Image 1 (cartoon, rainbow, N blue to C red):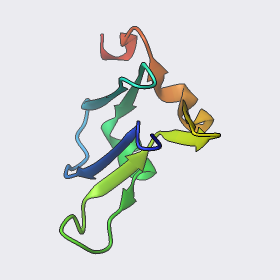
Image 2 (image 1 turned 180 degrees about the horizontal axis):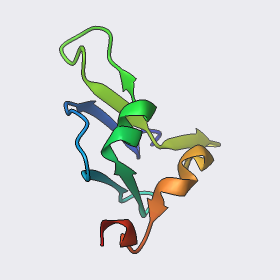
Image 3 (image 1 turned 30 degrees about the vertical axis):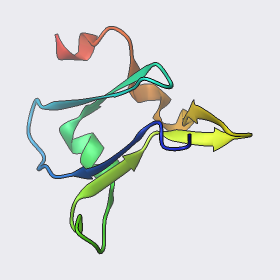
Image 4 (image 1 turned 90 degrees about the horizontal axis):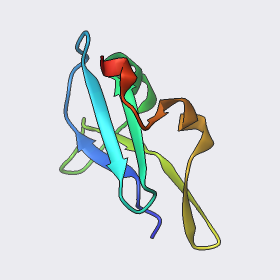
Amino acid sequence: MGNSAIFAALDYCVRENYYFIFYSEILDTFWLFESAKLFSLTSINKSGKNSGKHTIKLNGKKSNVDYPLTKYKEFETVNFEKLG
C-alpha cells in the first residue's frame, strides 16, 4: 500500500485537445487531465534511469490506508464528459 496512485516515468509532450486518464483499482478512482494541466502538476525526475521523465502521485496514506489526494479532486471523474 502507499503506491496505489503513483504514475511514474511518464514521457510525453503537451498536446492540444489531448487528455490523460489515470485509474487506481485500489482506490476505484479515475482522474482525467488535460495535457497542459498535467504537465504543470507533475514533478520531473532529476536522476536515474528515468531522468527527465514525469511523475505524479494522486494518493496519500494515513493509518496504512490509501486515499485520493483532495488537491486533485477536480480531476476525478466518473463520466468523462470533458472528452465529448
